[in-house]
Image 1 (cartoon, rainbow, N blue to C red):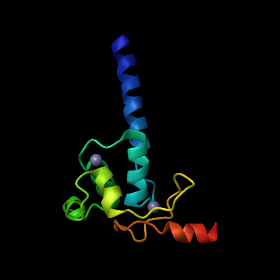
Image 2: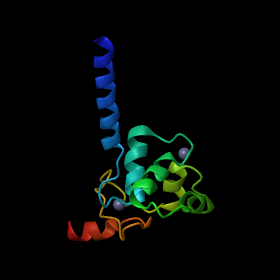
Image 3: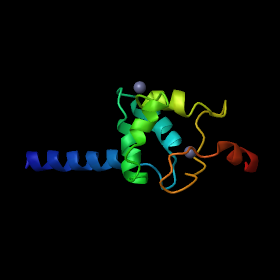
Length: 116
Ligand SMILES: [Zn+2]
Ligand SMILES: [Zn+2]
């Protein structure tokens, strides 16, 4: 009995963390990384970039190599060196939407500001 309850709770926790770490439907790589690093931090790998790629740009098999070439050798470096532009103040902004399906280009948060 005890075992099966523990198993159930564990399964629920796994399902929950899956939802928490899932990129939103049109969330761009930059906003996803920002959200994940804010919540869970960087472990020195591309784990969040890879998670985003697997779900949002599965054909971008060279994404992490490309990010490394641009100075992003782990998730936090990707934010620092590959996507350095971010509007100041206001803390985290909602993602303005992946420009194109399968594209790792960041959304245009300035556009979001103009309409806000
Ligand atoms: Zn890092
Ligand atoms: Zn975004």
